[in-house]
Image (cartoon, rainbow, N blue to C red; front, side, top):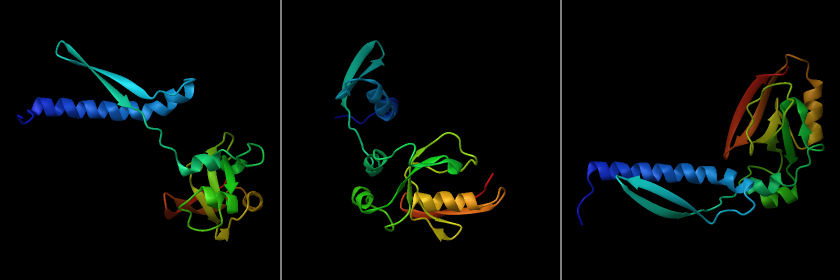
Length: 171
């Protein structure tokens, strides 16, 4: 077997990059399609020769997919932050592994109409607001309502397994 020339190696890298792009786009395509694809056909033109590859698709599910499925848009809305949140209880603890503690509010989705632009991500866990533990959605909502416009807010979040702090001013 001969070693790959630079051009052949470069073409393989481009092909692999194309596969990554295709695999990243598949969830959106699969959601719009009534039948999810089991494989994707990739056709590559090499000179005047076409080469076809069949690439199997793999759906990667997040542990938060099951948690997000139990949200109710009216009951779980936290308007000032523009999120749908889920309280961590025993049922949620059994579905979402990797939580740092048995309390907090999981950001299940972003919602329109936030009064303040807060860079929360789906999967973030709001643990504290200005040093006060957030155990329920009612506690989060009432704490936000009690703050005057222009008040500084610091959220302690669990994001991707790490604790971070996010500061902003309430509008």
